[in-house]
Length: 333
Image (tube, rainbow, N blue to C red):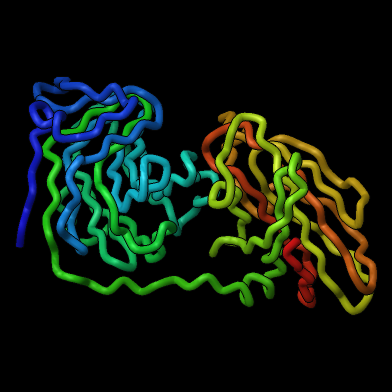
């Protein structure tokens, strides 16, 4: 099997550094590449000749807050697969249209808690297959996290590394490996509907009033980063229309990021903010973050939302109606 190795102290000229300000550094006596600029990726200039490969490095986070990760399947500098190490966590965080998405992809499918790794060198690796990836720590024979659905699809594209706040990386290597099937986790809209998620939306930028159909992710979230480029203050409206056979009263539960105004049958039922502001809030989108009681009409009902982006960690909406008999009515305009 073929293997490519990089001494990042000497080999940074083989990478497109972009605006990362990556530069040689030394940590605990080891020469490495040092990154400190928030959320910047560094890409190997050359295309890699492998379809199945192990991407690995030694990484270190010197302070209690910091993130260092591996990049693969890069379509361009704004769309790529990212898995990173935080001091006490592994996170899968696909970057979409220039935005991180960890507030959308959270929970056990996308994250794994770890013992604190601050202030030490650790081996970090991702084994990439055409239909998924597995994340390893140290010399473990078994993966800490398996990602059966890569959100950008087939991971063809450039590889590299990424940092957010101070971090170090050394001994980057890419090694060809044998194909190993990873069981795919299908997006099951029928199951999500049975769990009373709103699965079908019509979306439009507020200023344009140009509607297109969108369906939710495998976790029930409407991922606006997949559709639009997030900019500070960007607002999108989303509308779902559905039919139920009889009048009912349920508890409408939902989560969002970052600011939401919400109407049911054109009556405003909620307005609020939810963003990264620890310890009060973490900004992660969960279907049970907030709730309001709703009386639904027999026949056609509508939910309309205005979602505004204020951060670059994930922009979207997730709603459960408590109704198990919804028939969605969507039409592109």
